[in-house]
Image 1 (cartoon, rainbow, N blue to C red):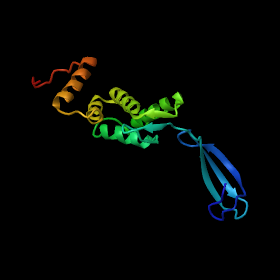
Image 2: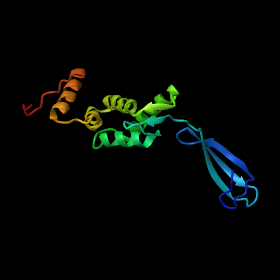
Image 3: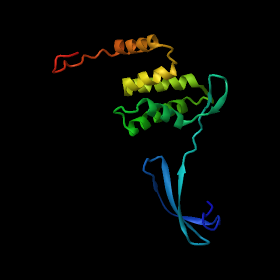
Image 4: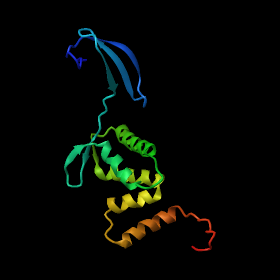
Length: 163
């Protein structure tokens, strides 16, 4: 490990411990040349598949795109950032476990839809309207109708007697 102060490669580890998320090892090091201390973080190098876009292009898997998409769908909804992060981790992990070198972007979109369906139905419909490119109100109503068929919920009557 190269010292950030003097660029020497000679250093020793003083302390090691797990990071806050338990996916990182935090190491406190001391340079043997200049005797200054610095911190490094060590994490597992994960290999993700390439994403095949609709137009045939291939690009690296980007966790942030999934996070941003879910976050936008959940905007002004009672879904915390921690819940969104866990959902993204599950999606990410499911593709890692398959071990495929390439994955179609449609599969990612469907996984996001499934995850949002479980998290928040309004966020699900928001994401679906963009992802499935609804052309008109009929497409939107069909999706809401399908959602209602899957989860018929009875709302408690309002106190003022209105629907």
